[in-house]
Image 1 (cartoon, rainbow, N blue to C red):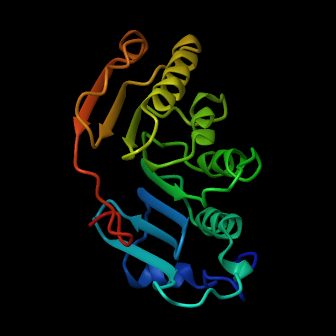
Image 2 (image 1 turned 90 degrees about the horizontal axis):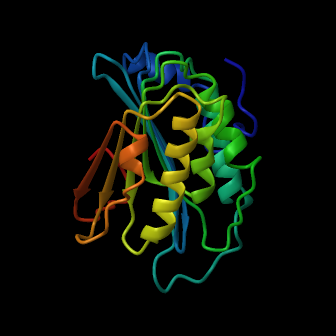
Length: 231
């Protein structure tokens, strides 16, 4: 396997393929990617599942406890670098059998995304997933939504969106509606959109019902253990 950019001093070792073989993950069909840069805590993890339910999880995190004097920021833990390393690591794997992809990214509050940092990299990754059927947005920037209305995106049929506590319902509805409208107009409509929220009483996004075959709403308590999103 080629050495990943920055892997010598970065967080992902160049031997990930060997680890996969040890965990009997010969074919990858489900992926979870998490990159988080929040106050006092940074995390980057990848989880890969195979059809046989064998799984592989690699995670790196750093935490600054309350009362600890602030340290000089390590450029290796900059959000953009973490995100790029996670995508580069995934691009080194065969993703042709991936049917489900979960995205959980939380940049710092002052982060300003641009198309090359976020959208462009996801398009590059999804191009390697021709069988991609479902995308789960566990936590995702609004900048990511246009990805799902581009011609280059695989024919995703199911979009599951977890609306975070404190997030703008109006902004979510606007972005999801635009994706559904564009895909419907291009003859590749989504079969199902599922919106999971932590609060009851949010209004239905009525335009979706004319552009998507099935729209579901679920209310679940907001949970984040900060480690394994499959737990």
